[in-house]
Image 1 (cartoon, one colour):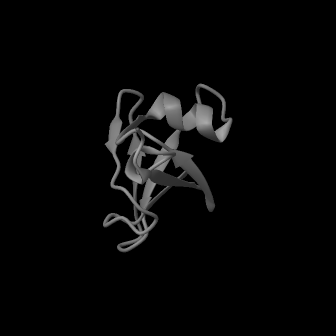
Image 2: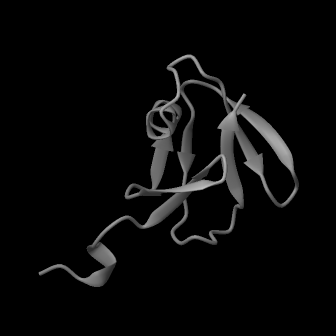
Length: 80
């Protein structure tokens, strides 16, 4: 028996202003590129929307997500 908490994506990932549903509590840079439809060599930048700081992610980076649209870290991803 599935409960409501087990059904569907628990996370929304903001990629250049568009929300993408995601079911896992982590996402890799390769998965972000795939989700966005970007080239395998495209650089990815994490943007903290609270401080407006940018961090260029390495290819081996794993990002931990928090559930809900308004999770604590206001982060979005964009091409570098």
